Each structure stands twice: as structure tokens, then as C-alpha cells.
Image (cartoon, rainbow, N blue to C red; front, side, top):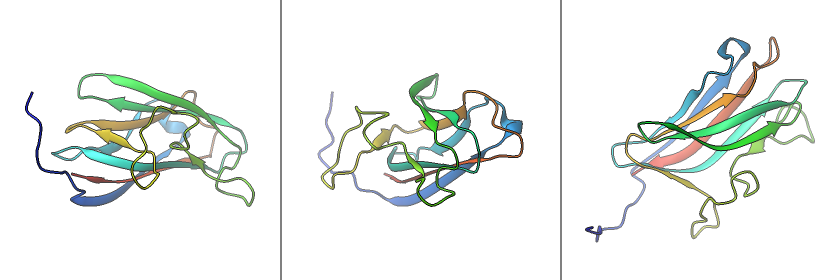
Length: 139
């Protein structure tokens, strides 16, 4: 196996987001599509205007299959009212095996053509929405 002697640096900073609404049922939505040389995702957060908790799942797709990274119960009105912060998927609790970079940030590396997906375990409450944002860069 040949090793790359040149370091990889972020080439294109980006952020993406998706909304999960009742009409989406439990369908997985693509949150991030990796660039031609892969991607480094440094943050994924979810907010909710729902007055009930909702279980969301974060998935990795390697180009062939979806692989579950973790499931989290999103608190009532997370990120929408004072005192209830948005949920941080990279907080080290829900997906504790994520590596930590030299800046102390947890991150996820996606290979070229890799996808990060998110979906609700059950249909979201009528007229409510969950918002998820990812921040990172392509190599």
C-alpha cells in the first residue's frame, strides 16, 4: 500500500442542512456528499420546533450500504427556546469513537463518494420540523 507523502488540507469549506418534516416519514435524507477527494466534517447539529422529543439517526453511506453511526433523542424545542440548546452530534457522548484533531474538535472523515445521512426513527409530529446542519470541508 502506497502512502501519500503530501499532506491533505481543506480545499473547499462548506456547510449543508436538511429539514425533516412529517412528509419525510422515516426516509433517510442526504446531509453531506463528500467531494472528489473526500471530506472532513467537524460539526453536526440539530434543532427542533417540536413540543415532543424525536429520535433521529445519523448514518454513513460508503457508496454501497447505509451504516448507522448513532441514534439520539432530540430534546423538546432544542435550539428554539432559551435554556434548551441545539443538539451537538459530535459531543463525544453519542458517537464516542470519533477522533479528535489538533484543535480539540471531534470530526468525521468521509471517503470520496461517501454520504452522511440523517432520518427520523418515526414520523415527526404534524406541522413540526427538525433542522440539521453540517459544517466541514472537502479535500
